Length: 237
Ligand SMILES: O=C(O)CCC(=O)C(=O)O
Ligand SMILES: [Fe+2]
Image (cartoon, rainbow, N blue to C red):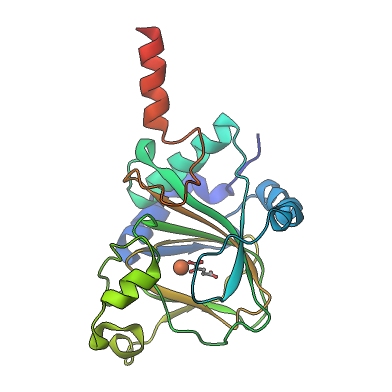
């Protein structure tokens, strides 16, 4: 079994309290070296699978990432994320699993966005990041949910004053220097966020929810755990 997380998991409740307070957390070197090796070894294969990006903003190419599907690894993943964030882990599914490769001509300071509704949680694992690239988050302001299945639909629903370039004009974001092996978790459909100076960066993102939403059809067979349990008890009955 591939180990996903580092030793911070032994103090999970402290990290959970931090996440509860802020709506995001960055755990330096929170990813286990075994998983980082697995992810890096997959990069070429993912890219061979072709670009599946649907975003109109054209900042990056996106490739489907094969999650390691051993039962113990999947269980470690959802149990840890559930305990960290307070979402019911037996209901969690993976609504997106993408390797993202930013274009060489990606703008240096694109306006922030919110992820689609199926992204209750955005879970980022940087693999290669330029020295001046930063993740910017607005975790304390303008936290209305993107209730749509895409960012474009959400943006179109906003008034002029609600658009990020206006609503966030006087607000300083949290600026995060994310390095390979770090683990980033934040409420993706409610927190405005973006990456600056992203050109050439490669980041892996898992998006998750406990709502049963799988708009891209990318969930894995082992999830949600609740359905596995039901199927098992049906067999035993
Ligand atoms: O590059 C990042 O860390 C952010 C990516 C992101 O927000 C997204 O793909 O939805
Ligand atoms: Fe995003």
